[in-house]
Image 1: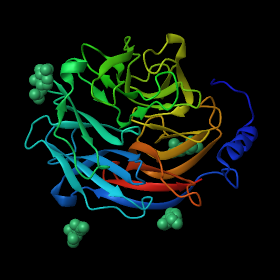
Image 2: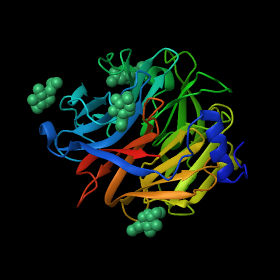
Image 3: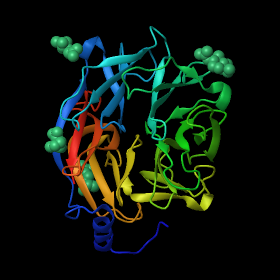
Length: 366
Ligand SMILES: *[C@@H]1O[C@H](CO)[C@@H](O)[C@H](O)[C@H]1NC(C)=O
Ligand SMILES: *[C@@H]1O[C@H](CO)[C@@H](O)[C@H](O)[C@H]1NC(C)=O
Ligand SMILES: *[C@@H]1O[C@H](CO)[C@@H](O)[C@H](O)[C@H]1NC(C)=O
Ligand SMILES: *[C@@H]1O[C@H](CO)[C@@H](O)[C@H](O)[C@H]1NC(C)=O
């Protein structure tokens, strides 16, 4: 249950016992960073919406939108990918795994997630989310850890024609009951179904349906969202607070039934997580919950990682990653050996004048 009042020292000792690690996690520090994409790389105007995931074969996969002609959300794009097999120290050259040609309202990322029971990697993204009457949600998958991908599969026949903008960030597979094995990814919508809803699959991604829904109510407008599974099998989601309802901070919500519902009493505002209306990320690693966003009420600046030892009830520490312009971010575990698996990682939008000048990977030592 969330709401444990155990002091963090006890959690720390529990970590030690459970994981058998030789020392207790200390405060994260920046271990390594590397630029993955810069404006103009490979003739692409702007790379945006970075997402990252560690895969069961020990690799990392990072994806972004390659916006061909300008930095706007609409317009034609590539789906860009780089992979790392050495904990993010070096990365493969960029490959464009999707290309929407000269589409005036092309693809938008999106979430990446893994079915660890079948070793299948999925990416869900939207198409024509701004200008079309008939919007489409697409799913692609890979059975070789991102080396090759299936043709886009049109999910709209299963989940309906409402606009669905997944994430951005990562989706999850439930590791515990209820609904162990379920794939879940949540996102926001526009007219017709304003607010946040989740889609779920209980058959390894073969079929999908709409599950939990948090509707917009006037200026309460939850937007871009990402979720994690906590140790007890419940879900914690963080959402962009589009109209700054109640605060310039994050909307948080919990589900105790595998994403079928988010009770009204389990939706709250986290005043510590100040936010300038942006996408943010959550991650659970061992018993610690991490959160990343540009920590500022009004501007996309000050990329910060915070951590919590009580399932996100309180945030006991923070690390400034970049003081300057910072935008979207996504956290990940880092695959590792027993000797050195004390890292987490992130990708985020980083700039000197504008936040979308580059996308960087950062490895944090715990
Ligand atoms: C990666 O890109 C560089 C620069 O374009 C090129 O020289 C190199 O051969 C590429 N490496 C691989 C493995 O394709
Ligand atoms: C996807 O499927 C829906 C419903 O079957 C259809 O209306 C839509 O046109 C399809 N999208 C594309 C791009 O083919
Ligand atoms: C950046 O974030 C840190 C950590 O929350 C905070 O203390 C600081 O005031 C923030 N700086 C700015 C300029 O907002
Ligand atoms: C972690 O250990 C593996 C295996 O010994 C090694 O290849 C890798 O470089 C190490 N990673 C870091 C970041 O030190």
